[in-house]
Structure formats: structure tokens, C-alpha cells
Image 1 (cartoon, rainbow, N blue to C red):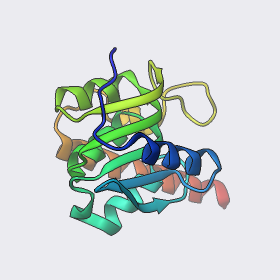
Image 2: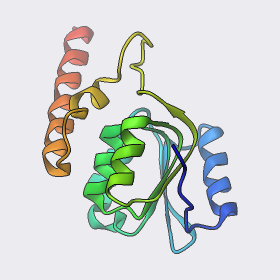
Image 3: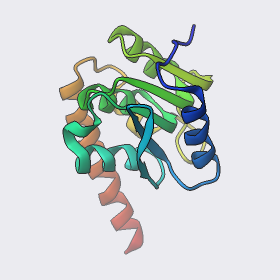
Length: 157
């Protein structure tokens, strides 16, 4: 699979990648050639946090994220992202973005995103693998996040 050219200055992408590599962010937004937002966290939560806080301010922004599976790709589509750079992107995510003409690039391409235990597919990616509609995908993402939160609460008891 061929990467796309992103219309963001390379030095800005590299600065965002450095921030992520240093553990200071999980997701970064770039707009008009400048880093505008930095969100910490793991998994889908940094991108979801930006989506919930910023709403349509993601429209026209480039998303730089540590890991982009199909769930994150769908969230980028719903948010109106202009492009995506991922340190690690899944093949379903790369294809989904390409099919929607959203430029994407990456450092590493993977068949799928693994779960945190490393013994299966990430539950977020798995929840939307057969979904093509971004709004229906967003609902599945939210439902899956809710199930995960409930399981974590039960484990804490």
C-alpha cells in the first residue's frame, strides 16, 4: 500500500512525532501548519477526547496519532479531519481513509491493531471492521467504550 503526500510541513509532522515519542501526547492536531492541540492518553481516548472537546474544530485539521486503527479512522472521518499521520496504522484504517480520499501516511503498517494483551485484535478495531458508515461506526465505538468501562469497573470491585 502506498502512502499519501500530506500537505503539512514535514518539520511540523516531525515535531508532533517527537512529542508523541517522548510520551507527552497520544494525539496531536495540526491546523494551518501549526500544532494547535495536544492530548495525552492511551488507545482511542486522546482522539476521542479531542473530538468531544473540540467538535467541529477538528474539521480541516491533520491528526497525528500514535496508533490508528479503523475505529480511529472512522472518528477522523466523522470529525472532518483533512489528513492523518500514524506511527502505526492498520490496513483496514489505511484503506478506509483512502476510500474516503483522506490523505494518510504512517511509519508502520500492520494487518490489524492488537489488543493490549497482544493476543488478539483491539476491541475498538474489531467493533467496526465490518462497518463502512462513519456515523454507525461512531455509535459502535461509543457502545464498545461503554462496555469496556463497565468491565473495568467490575474488575475494580
